[in-house]
Image (tube, rainbow, N blue to C red; front, side):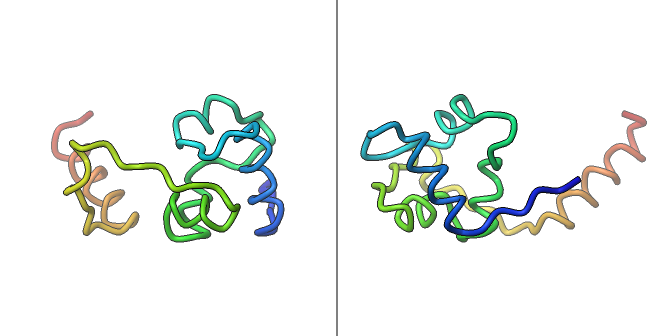
Length: 93
């Protein structure tokens, strides 16, 4: 069964897991979240980016690591899944 969260519930969860800190990184969020809390991916999907979700919650956006600052993805999820399936089909694993 899929749990649906309102935007307000998502933002309240971010604030709760920030534990009074001014920001909350995705990795820290995933470490602190409970099984019934939404995944970090849902925030990106709902708000457009992790930083936008943080801003909506009144938290400070985190800085992207230097090695990732120029990284972008031009692939949509269906394209990535299709590429993985093709690879599996061609390699057998």
